[in-house]
Image (cartoon, rainbow, N blue to C red; front, side, top):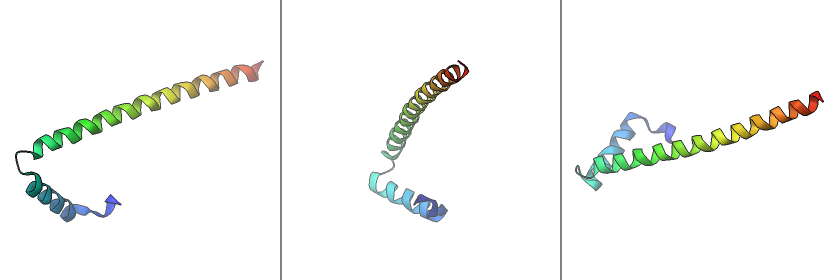
Length: 68
């Protein structure tokens, strides 16, 4: 969906955001979005790490069972 925006579309979106929110609020909004994305990325990484650890344990247990 967003792969078709391109540079001109991105510039229009930024200009609209500047007109709607003003120059004083735009840095605050950018920081909030960046912080939210970082927290989301950290949370998904934690979940992914847990799933991979559980999967490794299951694989190791299966290997031990197949050796016996």
